[in-house]
Length: 474
Image (cartoon, rainbow, N blue to C red):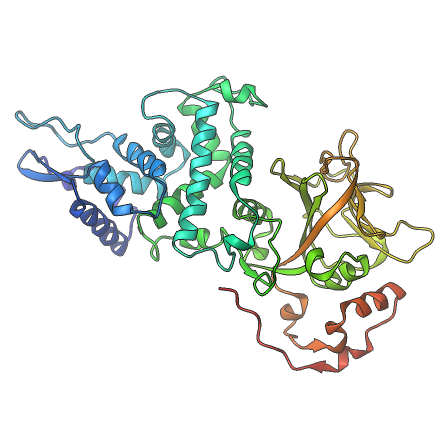
């Protein structure tokens, strides 16, 4: 009767898993039980092994920060056991039971927001039934830091090298703040600014948050799966976790330290169309290719969808997603999947407002039309603009950019450009058409851009060099 495997609730949670997954869960719990300081207590007719926090930490080792291991343990121990207690049985207050471990795993991997909310509340604060916004912000920061940590520890960064990326400390805080900004208080009110940190949140608030912000559940799965090596190759969510970061191409082999960092890459990638999340390739970096508008055009024209990332001289980092290939012409282009974004000092994405179709614009060498690269708004009043006189730009939004409903992205309305990167997302158009060969002009993007600007066709397209092996950064 005391055997947890016999109760219906336990079996219900086990039934969510395939037989191979059940075997994997059993194996991980057995390994936990074998770690130091596992506790064996008598429960009814069967001895039941319980796992201590120290045993969990010993098993996890350095794959997760200690603070996140403690939060996981609090979440596991918050599961109410359903076995029948018999006279003489000890109080089940010491250590983690297998039932709790299985139900916790089942809930985080297979459960809905309603099932998860109580566990997450205990992970935020084990001692309270309600929590403050500030405590949820601390939890979100811990969670994001743990994801970055474990992906690096397990060598799952897919070509993104920490030494080649911007420091992620500020971006962790920015992403945590962005996620917490979506919280609603116990009274159902959206929380803004500093008041959000003092607002009281209950289990219902957490449920609403988990339902509307699926990244929280994804991050929890990454931490549990990669931190405990649980259901790695088996779970249905494995592909979801694999798509968290795109494969990085083009950054290795350069001296460039990117403007991006792991949290901002994860955040931006989640906002891209699903078919464009697998691979990013560096097309242009001003610190590598030079501060030249012609060079910029030569590296981004006809290269498919891409992300522009800019940094102004006041250290604001921002940019936009172009949904299709850039073309040099005096008309607006693109579609309503384009968006603008901010990375620093805050992390946010601003999508199509429905007001107009001024998604993206690239022009050069015209006397009657603006010359430069722009996204959103209107001529001379873009949400994001880089002038053809490279090094100058503007972000005008009083009060908001009409196309994307975005605020001013730069520190000053008219800004000076410190550096710029452009990343192709998805496959190049040539790859999609089965054409991987290089044109003679591909080796001279500046000449290619000049031809585009003059409206000349590329006659050399018929004389292509054999393809080279693609760069592998993993």
